[in-house]
Length: 398
View (cartoon, rainbow, N blue to C red):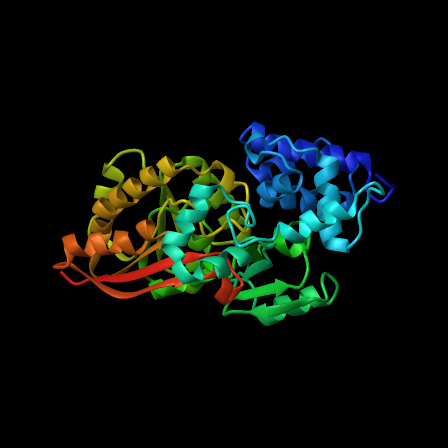
């Protein structure tokens, strides 16, 4: 390798990829660990390592094909794959020994196939079954680098004021997008900004920002976010409610709710109460009490491979079967928390039919005497330059 790419970068990239494929560590956590072990890395070092680590994870099968190696073994030579990716970005190889044969192989790797999109065969077929004629379009978008989106905390500032602050010295390429967001034309170290630490915004995909508004919340309501996780949509709901009323954030994993508490404190949001679902009584105590109910259910994450490319190597067909059962179980018990006249939103970050339309169809077949479908839509990555989501909006009328 020439001096353009330092050996310490290659070693760091290798460590991240090894952690993801051999230790089953999430990509973001592997990267976080990598940088903790290398405190002398500057912003340029971190940017290069992060970019190439994610690119290798995202394009692993295609890279293996270029190098005539079986991708299932996950042990590609880091120097070789970085050289390929460098060529794709810059039009020239780093290694002087790289040949025109390799260049031709790289060009031929961009196929509209499981290999070309770097997916396991079964997963490519699963997308095809659900997306039909939109399959190639959506996979192209999901195989690209995700934009940076933030959602403004309207309890503390306005979008226009925040945009001005950002443009006045933090990033000159920021612009408004959607109803609540700001985006950037290139990556930003937003978590180091004081305005983040002051709670003026949260990072949230533009597609994800469309879910909370579907609930049509208003100040003073009681809202239950029944699968709240770390609370991105919980905090959005609080903003839409003007910080007034009550939001009860539930989850089966208490540590995620602890993260939500930290985020709410930073955002100075005080109308959120967290409750861990440790027994069925947690749900029963809330029967017929919610004006609004959000079921952002556990899912395959098939709509968010753009941000989480390591997920495509970790998800298995049997896990999707398990998740469909969990979703059905949630739809069986959780809607009982909704009042008559209330609105419920069922949401996933999946593009798979069995997790989305099929779940709602099954639910309505069983409970059509109580619930009515108001709207149902898929947020496609290609249409919003976003992650992929599904939203079903229902009302309880009896």
